[in-house]
Structures are given as structure tokens and as C-alpha cells.
Image (cartoon, rainbow, N blue to C red; front, side, top):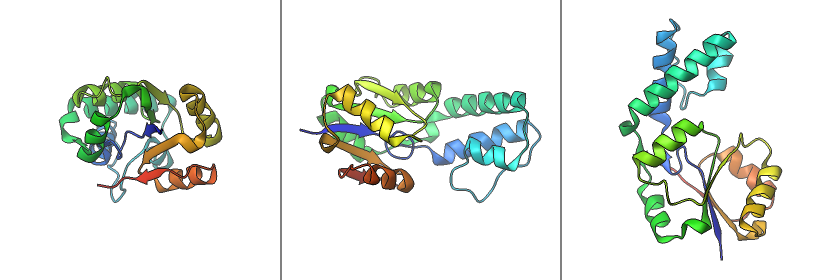
Length: 172
């Protein structure tokens, strides 16, 4: 029997467009030029383009998060995965995400998904071995019993290198 591990951004819910829009809105409030021709604007991309003070970074993130949450209706759920989740027991499913908790809660609330996961595992997803150990400990299972739903090709490769064979790459 599998234990299911779902990613949030662009796996369970398509968020790229709103995420980039929110960062560009925050940049414009800070008097910075918008970033163009990037699929998904991230904090790392913003910080590599602009030499922001810690205070500016804090303000940027606060504005970005508020804009995202205020416009959450611009995101779209992955209907196939939502249908799958409705057929699974919450005790068999966790959400594994690097997103900020306030944004995760807003998305889960917006799509009525607050009760479909037994656990939300917040991680930077930089130490896959550690994360896999924690997930297996939580489920009391082996890696071979895990089934991942993920959209990030680099992360999928890291999971495969760590011995995970059951991975479904999701796309729009």
C-alpha cells in the first residue's frame, strides 16, 4: 500500500503566473523594475537581480504574500490530483512544500483541501535524504512505499537518485 506525497506549487495547484505577478507587484511598490521572461519568479531570482537590504526583502515578501492571497482566485487546481485526493484517505497523504505557511493555508482553504492531508511537511527541499527519512518516519514506511507527485524536474532527479521510483511528474 502506498503513502502519497504531494507537492503544492504547480503540482496540486498551478501558481506560477500569480506568484510572478505578485513579485512584480511588490517590486513595483518598492520602485524596482519588473522582472520579465522568467517562468516563475522566486525570492532567489529577485535577490540575484536586486541588491536589497534585509528590510526591503522583508517588505517585498510581505507585499508579495498579501497580493498573492488577495488574488488567490487566479490560481487553478489540478483537477486530476484533486480527484485522486478525494479517493484517498487523509492518513495516507501528506503535503510536502517549500512554500510559506500563510500561503499554503490560504491555498488549502481556498480549494477546500484543509482536511485531505494528515500532515503538512514544510521543507526547503535542499536535503532530500533528510526529508525522505522524516517522511518515512512519519508514515512508518519504507521509501519503496512512497508515491510522489511533483512538477520540478531537478527535484524529481534528486528523488530518483535517493531511491524513489514512484514519481508522477505533473504538468499543466
